[in-house]
Amino acid sequence: MIKEIEIAVLPKFLHDYEFQKLEASKKLKIPTEEISAVQVIKRSVDARMRIPHYKFQLLVYINESPVNLFQPISFKEVNSNKSAIIVGMGPAGMFAALKLIELGIKPIIFERGKDVQQRRRDLKQIQQFGNVNENSNYCFGEGGAGTYSDGKLYTRATKRGDIKRILTILVQHGASNDILVDSHPHIGSNKLPKVVQSIRETILKCGGEVHFNSLVTDIIINDGKVKGVIVNNNKEYFSNSVILSTGHSARDIFYLLKRKNILIEKKPFAVGVRIEHPQKLIDEIQYHSKERDPNLPASSYNLSCQIDDKGVYSFCMCPGGIIIPASTSNEELVLNGMSVSKRNSPYANAGFVVTVDEKDWESKKEFGVFAGVEFQKEIEKIMFEYGGKNQKAPAQRVTDFVKNKLSQSLPQTSYIPGNISAPLHELLPIQIVKSLKKSLFVFDKKMKGYFTEEAQILAPETRTSSPIRITRDKDSLMHLQIKGLFPCGEGAGYAGGIVSAAIDGERIASAVKKFLEVS
Image: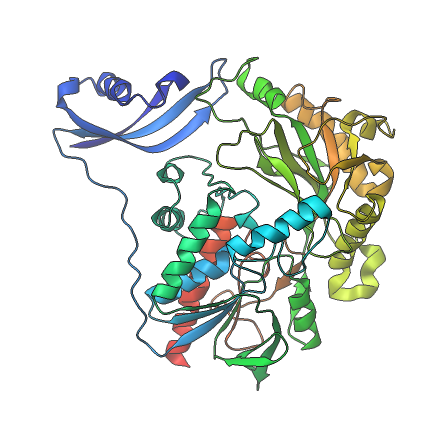
């Protein structure tokens, strides 16, 4: 017999198997001798009580042998002559490729950036010297933005696909088994590159192709049907199916589609700042204690509210993390956050952003569908120039921000290029400033101590999601105008984060299979 139960566990018993077994016997009112094994299937921290504890969901085996719940996915060599081109090797592109292999279709991937190991040199250049390689950076390259910016795997897209399957594939390629049970799974930017490399090796082993330093500069279209792509302006590759999974920062793809009169549309997104606190302060607020139990993770938060007609919320929260330069051009400044697997930095940071729509970029309406993009670009350029054009981030204590006061000093920051005191209350769009100011007091009521002079904001956080949607049919998942063209993932406006993008990649691969069967 197998029973599923929930127990509460103090942090000191986190890894105590015998204690878990004892608690199971108490809850089920049976002798421990009858329990053959217990398996943790879900684990989360509950800090609502004065003393934080873990909640465990357990499978309890009563006089029965346990089964191995981890079932790896089988990937076999593709023998079919059917193939599909994938543009971009972020999570959407990688998981589309793996699914295509399962379906017997050869994936041919073109990635504008470098492989995970080669990317490291370009990340060092931007961190230490402010030099941006426009095709190899924190956004572009093997694995996409998530590879070197955190590897958080939490998603609300529970109805779009099989989340456990995505996590299983990641474990199969080297991620920790913990991601299968943690309520907010996280791999970490120090470990995710090896997972990404392992996925690439599976793709190649099964007959797929991966081409790095291969920027798709044109899409070949004939009579409303996709026929292939042109790479680096000079080489043609042909296929009747092209998956566009280029990420939310590939503006050149948006411009390419517009030039070819391929339908795209503007969509709402969010902009704001990164807010940074001492991690110790966030731990004290969340865990109600001056000292964090060593068996508790660096604490996180998720805050949101409505200010007038705008949503304000925390985004991509990085406990024990650092702020990074996510710029994709030498004429802009963009910030993001990341954590390594141990989350042991003394800082906590999060996106602190406000939703924006057509009313906010009214002054950019002359740019048509690119009005939101131009709104983004203007903020990024202003911050870049104020920071001295070397990726230094304009910053302000939150207390001074609310008082419209230039900070005379700034707290230490995790941001390696450094920060510079700036009047963000003047530099940011006024509607963003008003919403951020008001929300700070709302958030402080939810987390007493959140609004403090120890906290600072650094600007800007502008790439929360794509400002453009590449339209597709809800049934075929194909572009509304171009047969064989499949917009996919974050860059197409249909996902947000590693797992949801991976799920979308799998859905698109299945749609490609159906298309190829009838075409």
